[in-house]
Image (cartoon, rainbow, N blue to C red; front, side, top):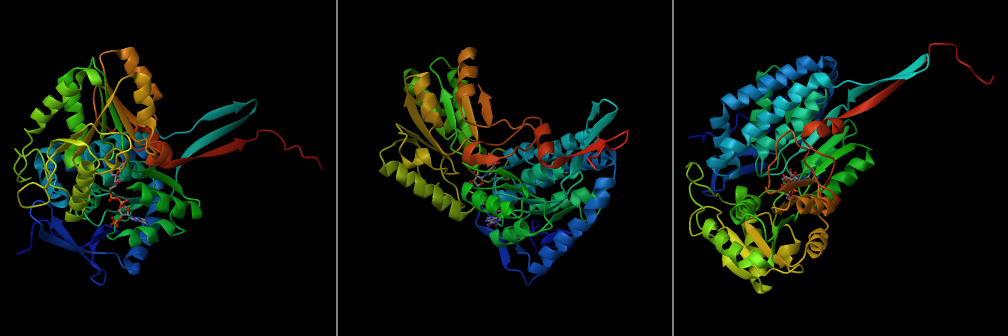
Length: 485
Ligand code: NDP
């Protein structure tokens, strides 16, 4: 019998499901059991061509609609997503292995927030009037054209919406390629947009590996590329986009610092460290994986952290009581286990976890290392799994310098009751998305993105509009034209 997660076909182009079985088969594996639940096929060159030409053709009429009309469609799509939240969350859990307890509140709901927010902004994309005596200049905020979205595997619904909603609000069309690991959810987003009234062809989904992504990024018809992925992929995609002078948004990886001062509320700080390391089993780009704890509270912090981490419920992700799921794939599990071994070899002190859980699926126990030093591999490289490194520090000046000593700059957090210090420290940290006495909140109203190697551009908020539109300026002369001859 066909599994309920199996989509009707691999791709969604021009308002309908499309199949081409000549493409390489991509098995979809449920991470909690290792069982194959669906198969899709990578896009062949013919499918890539169909998606790009359809999106190109659909864009002009979409951009000519009023912002109010486009916004109404996006807001209707948001309503449909909320109505179907349960089914979409179950699919997200099949796609990623993340527990239903999370997907019910963080995926389709976050996607719906983006559709609603950008739907609301669509009608407000106006220009300026700049008086110049009798003459004047007016500006218009115009669509970029055809955009390509490429997603990572940790938030397949959210990433499709975070890219698709602002792109469509501004009058662009999009071809979206999900990660080959999680191909299912973006198809539902495309389906819902059509149901909400989006014209066929404005949002299309094609499956495939990096090769398909590469074909999309280098196509001369594409005006913008928005990628969520790792830094090495980001460098390749950015370079390929530069060749064609395309706009880019790069949401890449991190190794973010979370700094906890002696005066912090210990339970809130522990909660922040848990949210910033173990949500989605640690597969979150903005995670605060270098937890700097001031020496005075170090052992107390570690004891409370170990106690609360022991309360994580590993198990069937479809059971709403389960609070901690598996790694997305066997490959990712092995990468993370490799880092855990490195941590042990390099002399970090294991506080809890540290191994694969004794159960089916790709589960790793939530792992905490203490006495981690700045030069250890687990403190320098992005692990993308449930491995928290706790480092200790003496002074504010010292911790800020150490926190900034990384190529990454996505996020940073600080826990302290001293608000002057909180703002000063955040002001001195090299990071794009920061938190004070909290960690990993990502509301659509707030800009999201990194500095340094962690990215270019911002997603969400009014900032995203700037990255999916461009300004045209028009000089209007009222009198005669003066010329030298
Ligand atoms: P990858 O960088 O491996 O892949 C990201 C996407 O790019 C995938 O769809 C991938 O396809 C595609 N891709 C790979 N090579 C190319 C290429 N040459 N041209 C075009 N597209 C290509 O990341 P993961 O999927 O492994 O995701 C994990 C990474 O994503 C982590 O490093 C994490 O930090 C980062 N991330 C960043 C976020 C942010 O907002 N800053 C949010 C979430 C994750 P395929 O995988 O199918 O081969």
